[in-house]
Length: 151
Image 1 (cartoon, rainbow, N blue to C red):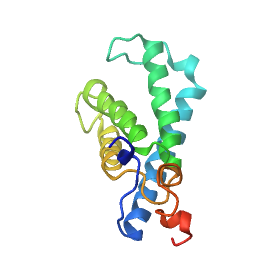
Image 2 (spheres, rainbow, N blue to C red):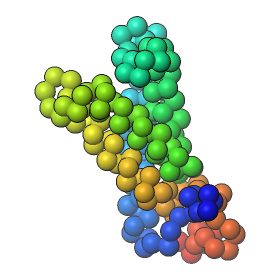
Image 3 (cartoon, rainbow, N blue to C red):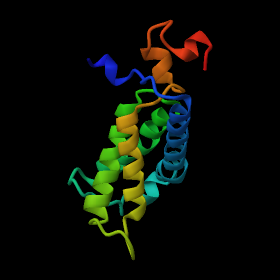
Image 4 (cartoon, helix red, strand yellow):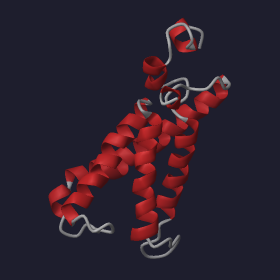
């Protein structure tokens, strides 16, 4: 049952292509626009970083960087896709609910967090698709169209 979490479904090639596009779109955008930015400027932002779960500013920033760098990387390559997407769902849920206070527009609006949240929820449900490392590592040889060369 647990292994079934990582095995892609037998949907159409276009469905798998759409999942690939979503993984790349949401993964790379999070990685380059948010994760790397926070990582590169860690010392500059740690003192002003919000601490909505009361873990401490530094611990909160480390957890967010973990989600937005490692989670986004895993999502992009399609490895442990549902787990990576779930980590990013938690990250965006906390950002939208507790940091942006569910405000969609205006100063401090959370519309972007809400949109990322929708994309990550989609990927938790859909998984990595056929064009992912999940397919390579979690599908038995001979069952995957990629491994058979029949993409």
